[in-house]
Length: 361
Image (cartoon, rainbow, N blue to C red; front, top):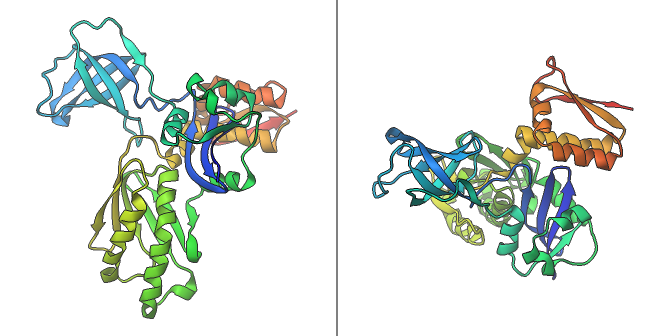
């Protein structure tokens, strides 16, 4: 019954899995070249007040900026004024950093970043304080902060096959649930839509009791998937084959399944269309957004090369994918080190933005 915090290293990325026996309990991506910045504290300056938006744009330094919401009881601020702020939400969904006001400074002694926010490793280590840390490489071991080194297991160990498969499955929109149930997860700009489906033997209006039991028993696993993928904001779930009037009875098992989530998501009820309505704090980017961003796709290219095309010497791609690779030179260099030879990048403007090909020696 050992609890482990496992780290698997890839070029530009570490995948952190909290496991107990063969069960995946928690998961996060750590990309050192692209920190989410949540919890970072800055001495900054008010760039522009925007009363119509209920806040102000704040310059953090180094071409970084964020939005500071201002409540009616907030201190009066002026453009150009120095302030101390904390990043309360990562840039995501096409929106920039969200900030929280710590102090309105007259003349701060420092400018720019004061304290970086915790890494995904630090956050998971705090959530699971009894988990032993297991790494798969010296590179991962070197990034463990001093405060966690006494929790590290000696040696190096890759993910067990069952855990690796569970982590890989998080990249797929189709989720297998208990009782033969399935769920399809579809992120949209406005919300996360989840459609639950039952196997054919359980469908039909004459089997409402069985349908209710199937949905109820699948909900805890579905709520775990929401947490593992860090799906957030508005979430709508369409239960499988259950009459709308019967769906109110699912509220109690939904609320029970949400309780272990540290972000304290809330079930708002059942809509007129029979959809389960959940809201979960949008603090960190979701896993689908991280995987499908230009940076995420660029790192996928490097992982693919290491596994499937180790003789690659040149990546040729559209402007978007090459730009994303160039913005993380350490990931490209790490891939080249593992390949044992130089890896060059070439932009082909005739290719679609995020497509790529490889040239082997």
